[in-house]
Image (tube, rainbow, N blue to C red; front, side, top):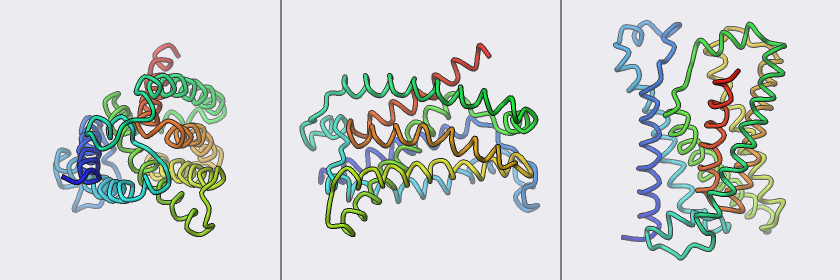
Length: 248
């Protein structure tokens, strides 16, 4: 089997397992269209998996086709699949991923603490409407979001920018990091609007800032240390946030 096809299939399978972790989440069922509200909660959950699975497939196809054209890497998985020899050790990926991920988690908790004082009522509504399980945080957040936003979207932006500018330099990568970070942050808005009927500007600002902190670091990790490092960091950030939350 072609190396890229093997990589793409492997990443899609990993991502789909991450999508399935959303089955562990209790979804808010208010304000659903009548024809959907009549369905059982189990069926509704299964239906919600369709869209992220389609997006995942597109992201994996795009990322697999373009990542090596812009010198981005998936070193450990590629090495395990015997596609190419890894230039970055998995130990190094874990070290950077865990340390930066924990740091991101701590920063996000600090930002959330400040905004929670200012937005106590909206925070309560948001927390009560949708509570992600740890499995979903690690599987969907750690794996799926990295495949969608870093491997798929960021890779495409870097490639497209390099084609437009006829150049592949640091600025090219930072454009990809910035745009994928912005999409990462804005991508959380639908959940906010579904949970809070009229979210304040301050709440949206918190969502934007909180998620941008992580997005910039995760994008840098994908660029410098490989996709696996970004996945590890994303998962580590969630572990940090959950762990700190137990004591607050």
